[in-house]
Image (cartoon, rainbow, N blue to C red; front, top):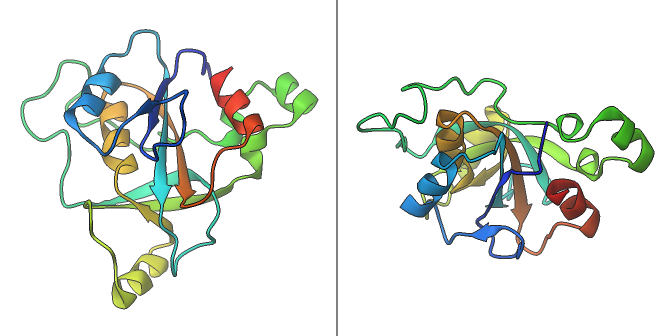
Length: 181
C-alpha cells in the first residue's frame, strides 16, 4: 500500500509532521474528502485503556461506533458511496511495507499491540459497568476522534492506519520513518 501521499491526521497534538486537529471538526472532513493522490489516511488519536487493555500504543484493527452519531448523516457528498463498506478498512502492519523492505529493516508497526477501539462521544468517560461491557465486547481502548474520521475516510475511498496512543506515549523515530516514507 502506498503511504507516500497518505493523509496524516493527528489528534494528539504531538506529531509535527502531521496535520494537527484539536478534535473531529469540519476541517478534518474537508481534508479527508480532498483525496488528491492519497490511498491511505493515517489517523493518530489519544487512547484511553483504563480497565480495558494494556496502556500501550495500539494499531487499531477494528472499531465500535458508540458515539451515537455518524458524520455521514445528511446529503451525500459525491466523493463516495452513501453507505461505504468499512469491513477491512484498517490496514495492519503487514499492509504498510512491501515484503522485501519488511524483511530487510523490520516493520516497527509490527511491534504494536492490535486492538478494537470504541469510539465514544467527546467527553464521555465510561464508568465501571460500561468498562465491563466494553471488555465483554472485546474492546481494548476507547477514543473520541478516530472512529468518525475513519468513517469519512472510508466514504472517500481511503484505507486507514489507525494508531491510538495513551497519554505519555509517542511514536518512535522508526515508526515515523515507516509512516512518512
